[in-house]
Image (tube, rainbow, N blue to C red; front, side, top):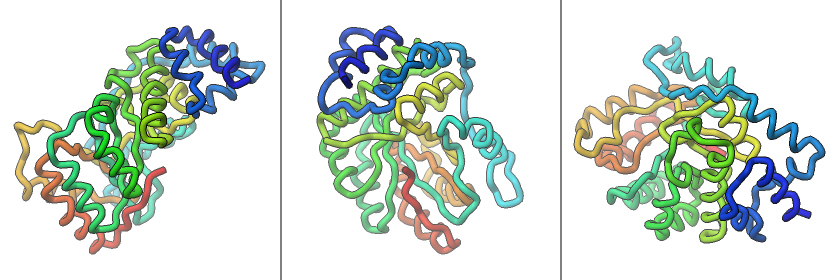
Amino acid sequence: MKIIAAFLVLSLLNLPASFSRLITTPENEITALQAAAESTDSAAFSAELERLDNTKKGWGQGKQVDDVNRPVSCTEFQNKYGKYDAIFIKDNAKQIYLTFDEGYENGYTSKILDVLKEKNVTAVFFVTYDYAKRNPELVQRMIGEGHVVGNHSYTHPSMPTLSLAKASDEITALHNYVKENFNYTMTLFRPPMGEFSERTLALTQSLGYKSVFWSFAYVDWDTSKQMGSDKAYTKVVGGLHNGAVYLLHAVSKDNAEILGSFIDEAGKKGYVFAKLS
């Protein structure tokens, strides 16, 4: 029944035949798609996704903050898109959440994992297919040490520029690869470049995923333009706020150098690092 259901969804979304072989493997756990296919409203559901606004929106937390340093735009977008299981900021409590984007390995992830282990802090690592394929030992270590491995797409495209079929493939193909190679089920998705639409948020939700954005990020991804550990530390500590979702890039030398000190300083200020799930 599940295989039939999967093929029904594939036909509705016009997914390519190569992907049909992925979704019908016994290891596949995209239960949301299967449930939708088994419903009598599958065609209506697919049509409803097509009708949703697909205008591309680029995300950034902006500079305007409220009286407790929480970015105003994050609260606004959380209220607007939370119905799609999108996360821009968490509850107004003394908890913060660390997330790292892993597009490629620059030699710092092991050090980051060492610091997290020493400080007993859990983080989310959003990986692409290329990263997972090239760095299986690091991905396995993330899992083994209790971190969350998140889905950052198969090829890192702008999701709203894709058809529903291709956008779905970007999430599910990596989902299946990680499940089959690491026996791990991912449930968190970070849209590449923070670009999304109402339609892609709804599609992601239908696949059983939450879309994770951020309430703090800075220009840390350019390895040729690192600002130096002192300035980076000031920048990252200055962004502390209740319910903060930190986006840090693991390719950054600055981030690797300041992580331990940042964790210590956040603790001194009364913040607890919580696990995002």
